[in-house]
Image 1: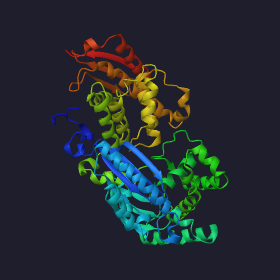
Image 2: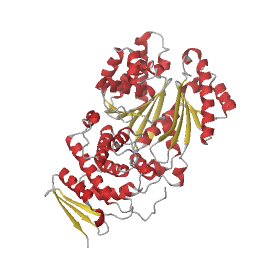
Image 3: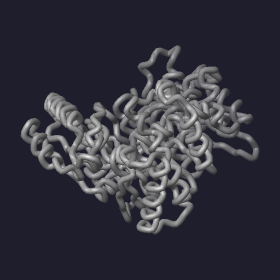
Image 4: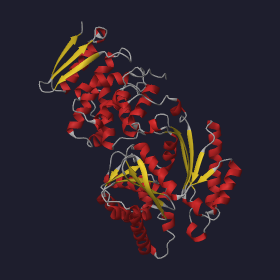
Length: 513
């Protein structure tokens, strides 16, 4: 990958930053998160702005189990956590990414033997573990949300095993933060049964609301494994076709229905269907009580699940400001194009070629069009018979930030139309149903325009031609340069005809003198 010259007009999305020295320093970032319930190593490739998970391993240690009663870390959990961290240190050394950044949260900060275990980890593994307080945990989790949604506003709620944190977001900045003991490991140690647990949760949640001073009607971002497990159960209950948890949306009514669904289900059978670990599923009923009270107290206008949390927040912490403020979708697609496309840089030319077809596109639609153009050629290595399906699967299931679920399907369908004139694969009918007829038509037009433009490439610096679209007279004109004239053969002509047909228009081809 070679850096592009600054003389290029990069348009509204700015120059790619992933090759800058500051971004290259994020090529491999290793993070260890020692939580109350799990210990995890994540190695990010963060140069492309959206986090790519080079390596991800989790061990369920339950360090915080029994903490309320004994005041000590779970002895068995200590053994398992130390073994995991020893392994993670060896992996990091083998990957050449030492030193790791390592943080610990509620269990380690509250246990009387937390400092002793911290010293043991340093002595046995060489890893310096930073034990952070609740407000810092809330800040890092909120920064993880900003990694996926720059400029976000609303309330971030991060639930761990032993604690639950809240943080305000406004104009892409973290504001007030509070912490509480509403983690399910803590709640299951409360005496008096479910009634006592509910009373404690209600009182604590009201105190948090008073301390935060939040108005109702904000967006709520849910961070943490227990929230993701509940969201996965919600998908199962609804028969939701796209089981990508990041950016999954729920409402208060759906959450209430799912809470009842959980209460009336066999948890082991439900766990198996949803692919949730046994240790995680055991915490879901208590986490559901907390979530329902959170909804009742704070009354959010909508709920978005974030797969990005404290670990991603630590990556965000290391990013230069210029990279933080970039659109994660566009930067990730640029990175993919530079790495995998046959002619890196042509996506920018293709975007300029197709955008006259969408004169009324708002900023959100332009993002999808731009992303499609950048990704239009990254799957060229796939077998031709399956290339359309591969591009659709990549778009709908890739680890991309800044995409609503229907936008994933729209992007995937546009890329599918790039490779085939018959994208009506019955495998995807449930996913296509997430789009309106207008969105399906838009994806067809964009895909056929990219399919035409891909036949006309010359290089990454020269526009092969110009599309002029008159929506009132339904006339499409393709004006090609003399250099591009030999490229307009039978296949290109057929593809232009397919685009004209998709627009229900008449078409004309002209050549410059």
